[in-house]
Amino acid sequence: MIIDLLKQTKLINMKRRDFIQQSLAGAALVGLGGLSLQSLTTVPDQRKITILHTNDVHSHIDPFGPEDGRNANKGGVARRASLIESIRKESPNTLLLDAGDIFQGTPYFNYYGGELEFKLMSMLKYDLATIGNHDFDNGLDGLYAQLPHAKFDFVSANYDFSNTVLDTHVKPYKTFLKEGVKIGVFGLGIELDGLVIKELYKETKYLDPIEIAQDMSRVLKEEEKCDLIICLSHIGYYYKNTPDLVSDLNLARATKDIDLIIGGHTHTFLPKPTIEKNLVGENVLINQVGCYGLYLGKIDFYFNRDKTKAANGTTIIV
Amino acid sequence: MLYKNFILCFFVVCFMSCKEEMYLEKIEGKRIEINDSLVGVSKIEDFIKPYREHVNNTLDSVLAYSAGTYSKTDGDLNTAIGNLMADAVLEEANPVFESRTGKKINMVLLNHGGIRAILSKGNVTTRTAYEIMPFENSVVVASLKGTHINEMIAYLQKAKRAHPISGLSIKLNNNYELIEAKINDNAIDENKTYYVATNDYLYSGGDSMDFFQQSDSLYVLDYKIRNVLIDYFSKKDTINPVIDNRFIKTN
Image 1: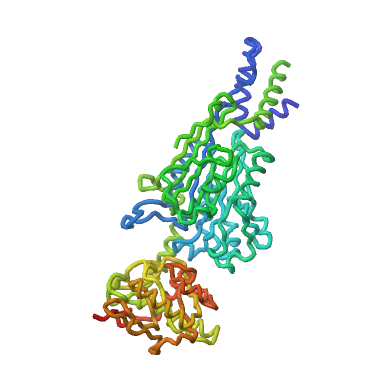
Image 2: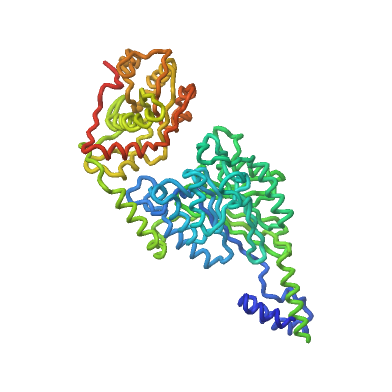
């Protein structure tokens, strides 16, 4: 039985075979020195999870030209692809996320309805996206028609699509397992009434983001037992003139167990992630990288199996 | 035998490790600028190329010829390019509105800030329409009573900006006080209902044009301002707008 298992493992995972061979070498030492087995396995104690993110790219596929008044020579999907490739080489446990408003902003969207945006994001191996208000610009049917071009999933926990064509195509959350670290990502969208015309969003129901986020963080923490909880939000960073309006900052303060909020909608260029205290006084990171693919956000989470390494709390470097 | 046990032990440990607790030790966050120091992935470039060529070919097809260069900064209370836009909305949207409702658009009001580029002398293309109007705003028609039209005029007097209008004419004195306001050469009747074409941004309270909130019915035409311009340009050989007397201040 053990041999069979070994064979299977060889077929499935060459890396795992390396571990076994090294642990066999270690096993000989166990007999001699009586050391614990766990300390001799080569599975590292520290695991690095990299979260890369964009938001409000708005169909900006080509870089801005040299004559552009504001963003000259910045942006461009092909360049973003090369940056992501190099980061993945250095950090294989990477998730690539988008916080919505993929659509609308250049003629590429008007001509192809989002097909090119989704195809390119698939080539860049995006893992997940949430839905922004502009992603409704060709209506629910327009978004639905482009879904086959997206080889990544969409999450939204506070849009109830059950009476629409998107029913079952958009999940509230998705979990990922990267080298023993379980990551849960849920999506939040902005209120559509007054922002998007009803004919476009039809029977989509908007639910309160804070209530939904409180529930989602409980599900991901307690039921899914996630080590890392990320909110992919398109509700906006903060509204200075209406500070009580639901926003990423207010969401961070009103919830717990969320480690990172990746935001969008307000096109906020944060020079570095914001650190905010949550409902129980713990740190939450909020990040948003403006718009048009001018920047890529990068958050590295270092986990350790050794509790003493995190005994003095989590170090945050921004 | 001993080895086999160790292998078994290893699998147990390995299996358990998937469920074991992970402690967050450190977080590092930053943003990275995407700029020309990065060399684009050629596979991605090659994939985009045919899409780009198609878009560019159609965007650059010539629709009309512009006799001059027109900027929204040339003119005081009305500008040639603003007049062109407001007139184009009246000319292109009215047949759509009339065919659906049997009514006529009496006037047009757009916003000066909504003119996003100059119209340059020479060939006018679809790209020109995208430059002037990159936003997706659409034409809506609001019904407003004469009293609300007067509020609109008060707003325009106060704003002192060349918000594009068509069908409406306003004459102010040197102190921006109203001398005369007319819709299609008739004095404004406070009790009459007027059909005002605008864009959905202004109708929703954009630029604080709150008088639109008093509209008792709204007609959504699903006709983008950009498409109005494209249709308008397509019908003209030469674009030759002028600054006129529709909104003026006398000395």
